[in-house]
Image (spheres, rainbow, N blue to C red):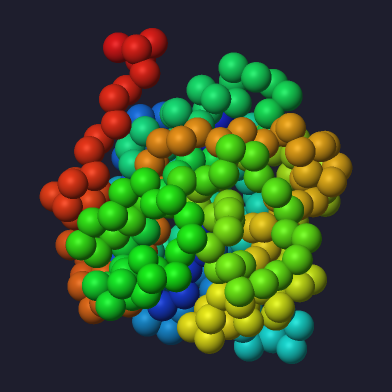
Amino acid sequence: MMAHRPRVSVVMRTWNRAGILPRAARSVLGQTAPDLELIIVDDASTDGTAEAIRSLQRSDERVLTVRRTVNSRALARRHEPMNEGLKICRGEFIAHLDDDNVWDPFFLQELLDVLERDPSKLIAYSDSCNHLSEPRLRRVLRDDRRSLRFVGKTCFVAPHLPTFRRFERFDSTFSYVDYIDTNEMLVRAAALRGVGSCWLPHPRAAVINRYQGEEFGYRTHADIHFVERVMGRFGSTCLVSLPRVLCHYIEHTHGFHSDPEFDPIATARRQGLREEERRACAS
């Protein structure tokens, strides 16, 4: 374990993703903001995930792990495995990446810059590029009422609204209104402590899932519940959006998404998503 306190703690939940877990972990460990720890919470995997984590630890001392003995979905009461990781986070800032998604190498540094410029901001979040199959993309284009910023053959970018609004009601357009995903956020640890230092399932998760579709019925929407709790405690102005594509979200609607060699960043660029210009102050 690192002797000093890292600047950023990244929590990654995983379950039976031995093949692609290293892909996600490498995108964390390869960040241009290197002062971090990666806490991997193994939700009682039964494949080779434990060995994959040990291999990561052997190659990088910044990798820590928590091993659950019972899978969270097997419990009578739904549990958020992320909380095991949050208990041991030491960073001033906290982020989360799913075990199948990927960050741009500048993800942490650019969101850190946003939060450091304005201490009143507690959550900074980026845009993301969504990777899916061609049939699924056609359905999105048919149903999504947002102005999509980019559409490729198997990926798209839908920018966030300028100001996030909590969900006051649900209707047929719910699937396509603004949604801040777990993977897009960087959070001040102080904000997390201010709302109880844990993630909780959204009290209306079942209703949300009915509008998002049967394939997403397992979701607890703890990310949106967290954002709403922070807004309720600190006010809506504590959030700030960075309109840059710094996260790549993989829907797993095609077999190649589970290929360890699948590179979503390169895929998006081949399909026309241009790397956005770096801010002048970074040059």
